[in-house]
Length: 248
Image (cartoon, rainbow, N blue to C red; front, side):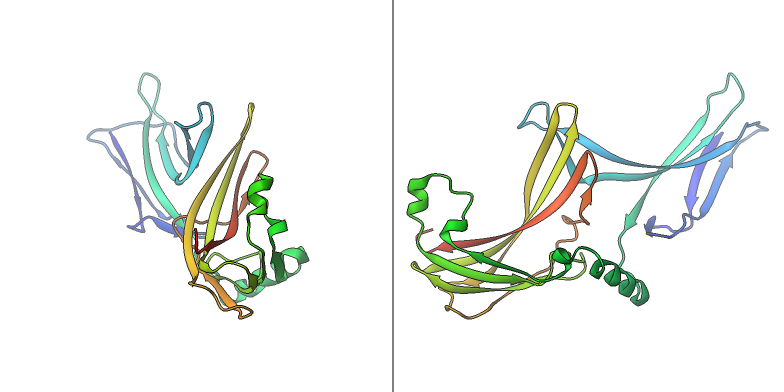
């Protein structure tokens, strides 16, 4: 006896809200008895042991799988038959009516996320240089900018502007980095993995002072996903502005 699952959609790609439609095919060369057929859907995320940090597990974006399982129960002394196939879920842009409702939902949420974010960068605001002697060698500068929104749709660009008001040294390049932060909790504590998933240049050479420089970045579909925060697992994103001076 053989068991097979045949989905109506040959590419096995579905969007949120769609139904899995197909047939279950049972091929038997003789009369056979069964005690029921069950269908179930499982979603799994594979955890891989890190070779860099023994005892810490890391999750990778491409290890999520969606499985459709069919099980045919057989009488005693006969082994049950199972068939498992994988299908895929893709995120699609909502229709206009749904898009409007989603925007209303965001706008009615926390105001600090949906409103523009202004920021100012100075030597005093640098946090990744703890050595006082190194911090004193940082040239004087003042940079201000604006992020249009810290709540972003994955199908829309990340936008804003940057203004170099003052910088003692010549600027070689200005880059925008998108960073993914994965945090996984376990009994021993929390493991955090930070991955740079995109780096684009938004300015080349010594940028003209006091002239707005556009920030425009398309999110990479293969390496980005909606922010997820649960009790034991988080996927978050950060954007870093990197200014490379002439002496590197």
